[in-house]
Image (tube, rainbow, N blue to C red; front, top):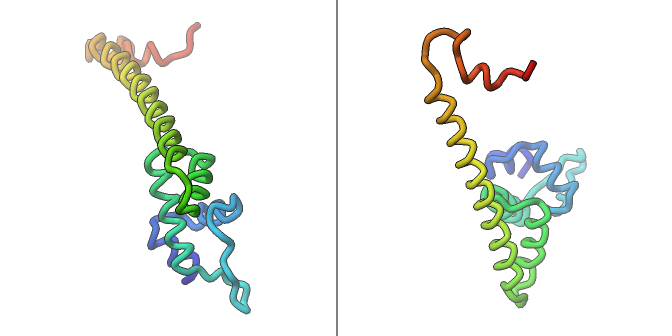
Length: 130
């Protein structure tokens, strides 16, 4: 299949597929006589794994390790567990930060009198200090 087909099947931009190739996350495809990339089921499966991992918040470095571990069926899954636990901790940190951000925005909204922009406390809070 061509790169456009792979992109559609995985809901991935062509540029992202090329980036993943360059980063070694998916193997380089073979090429036609006209120098077009030709992808197969191996590329589809690998790219799907990368996409799902990224959707779950794993970093590229973590995905690289997960791919290497996935390629070794005899490896212990302890490292996968450790990577996943680290990812969960990062998600928890982000959720805490988002909760604080939400609380601050709610406070700003509660202070808004809803009259004119000149009296808007939200705009005032966003403006640079004089």
